[in-house]
Image 1 (cartoon, rainbow, N blue to C red):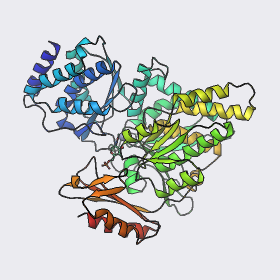
Image 2 (spheres, rainbow, N blue to C red):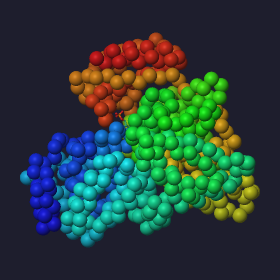
Image 3 (spheres, helix red, strand yellow):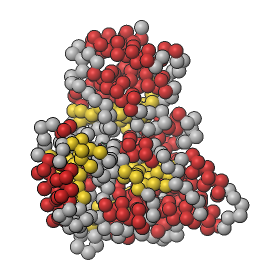
Image 4 (cartoon, rainbow, N blue to C red):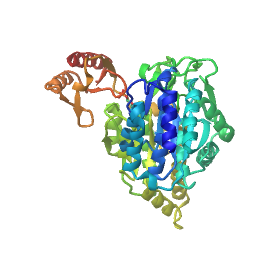
Length: 531
Ligand code: 16G
Ligand code: ZN
């Protein structure tokens, strides 16, 4: 009867049904905001069903991340604080796409398939949204749906995507991960950060200048500063008061165009950081003191820095835990070489998309996963945490070794283990640089990036391109890979691959080589062979 009422209301509000065919992909449902109204209303029933099936709280975040301000989107956070499980991606798509007359049947078939009528669980949905002007209206539709269904919810207001992931995990872990509120998030991170920074002797406070992409991260960092402002200075720019969301600023813009964003005063040698619109991606950058050259420190750099620091600590503790850095084909070849050869840590490759990296990272005691675009974090298995804890409690340790062990435990608490998190990643990087007494220059000197080129190619049907070996080899159309191999062999340290984009109707070409000119010519040549 409740479903009946919901379906009737859906038909009254959206007599034409969904305005287009949606597909729940890596980014959730993402569209022009005005096309999403029906989807947001139906998101209530998707979340309610998934919550019951998983017997836990589900999160919904209204955001379109680094997309332009006219877009919006909706993403579900699964019970352990991770991305929605693949099986339910299709359920979500089916419900979002059902015609008015099919909706009831589609919902009921899900109810029956998972025997949801037999489950006596009254879910609570955790909700957050970003700063887009369309987010309020979409939120209202979602709430209407939840109320009609009698599903309880907590609206946390404006939060970063990773904060909502944290809250869902905390809620479902009976608070053992943290308190399931924004305050609980700030408290957990700031406690760990203060403890780690207290081990550093320094006569000045670290300063970072933040480009917040005119997004939701700006206000959240200001809230965070109430907890750590006495030990770290974060100057917030692109806070949304003047500029437009993600326009000429933010992590995606800076990574793609390799120039400084608008809206941030540049001081050579200063430390800069850019978030994306929902603060789950982060890149660092600076302009060198001599000559003002722009230097980007991307996801590969962050992964390398974190891997180095964690490995150092494990060596001090003489703890053998199996560790891997997870990368995609987009990782700069120099970072892979540095991690494998200098740090002696195995690198594992996966397809593009956070869910693939995350899943792979779970296979290790310590899995450090980062996409070059700046999305990533570190996952520590329960075994790893228990072993480190047991070790620290050993009575016969020297002070140095014990404090190294404690630092590692604090580092784990400072890490948002649910998903890549700009705020958490920023604090971790600061801790490492402070512990090493390193500047951004020192960090950049770990290795030298190979010059690279990314080209978008418009083709009639991008799905004719099929890849294998974690997207590093092209298996269809026939002969294309041979051609790429030949071209790659004409330049030194050459590497190139092509793949159909998952988010745009294009084929992406990546090329890298020892010199900028070679990377460029290789990229162009490969792009031409794709036509
Ligand atoms: C999505 C993915 C991101 C990936 C990008 C690739 C998530 C949350 N986001 O934004 O990880 O790098 O797609 O886009 O999984 P592409 O397929 O167009 O290259
Ligand atoms: Zn994002």
